[in-house]
Length: 468
Ligand code: XIL
Image (cartoon, rainbow, N blue to C red; front, side, top):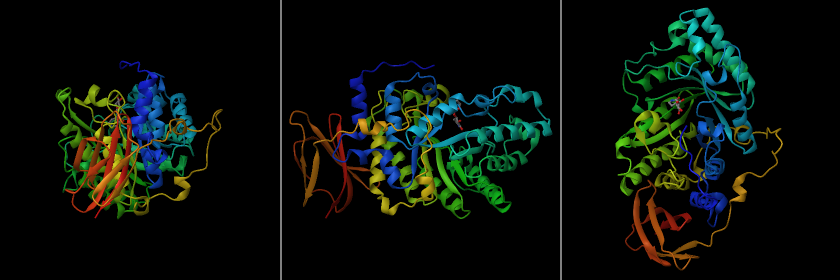
């Protein structure tokens, strides 16, 4: 269990304010709101601490106000849901589904057939094909059936392609593949579809952001999707986990190419587990430029996501750097949108800037209205409560307008310095002044579209402008 900080309520409001709630268009200023307007789902996991009420209050407040899709970090996996043979444990998953319903979040289910985090008892049946088929069928039928109509999308099979890039299935250390063979994948999709015909069903894997080269993992996955579609296996989506590092600069465009290849097959591509980590050894020595670079990569992923019409979900594998599997298990650090004190990082601003640079009128959604605005399913006590987004919405005094090449900023508090920054439509910083008093001269800026960000203390304001 990670150490729990005890931050004051003041810090909480600062974090919430910093997350973009205090400005002239407060309700428009969350990732959640902008995602919804664009017919897309952007979210993070609920880290496992949340399920045990062992996480800072900031976590949930930010989580439900900023995002519109949620995934359980571990609590819907095989070992969590069927710890003993045919004895199911749904309490934690139920808690999350209720939370999602109460707060209007879409739920991704993760993950049904995976070689990892399988309950130990399954290994008693190693190599027994018929028994393993029965075990997997029972598991999928009962888990998907339990949340039928409540979980919009499942990772039906996770990480079934091997690591050594010879484009084949993972053939070792997989109780399912070793006992059943590749047909476990096809069957898993069929059983999941039988248990909930309306759920979207994904194949999810890592390293498929490495490009569609001959023999690559991504190319192998695309070939399998072709085969599944040709054989009427009910797959509707692929998830690219995208656990990457700051140096992996080509990955966003690889994801774009993968999206285009899958579009031809009528399949959606989702980014399902994004984190962009720094090497662990760099902790404590990271500079503003490092965080800006991280923001730039986040920005490129969000650009690709919004520009490709068959992309639907963008899920980040954690909310705050205070709770991330990167530090514990990956030798990486600080890969998320919020720092350890729950302050939004430049990566957060980049995601917002990308959303603003892609107006709702230009972003296509792969989902019908019934998916974007599902009927409210809520039978818990407090379902009528307004979600927390309302309680934290305050109006900022800051506003701005552009006259020629001068930006007039009004409503700044007189005592504190305001920082005004300008980003181009690719999210690159093009102008910055730390001590804006009211009028900002932009005569050095070329014609074009930009996003202005104004920050004063914990208050922020962002707006798209056209310089002529
Ligand atoms: C990770 C969790 O974050 C950890 O808490 C857990 O100990 C191991 O699994 N790919 C996946 C996720 O599909 O389920 C993994 O989550 C990260 C890699």
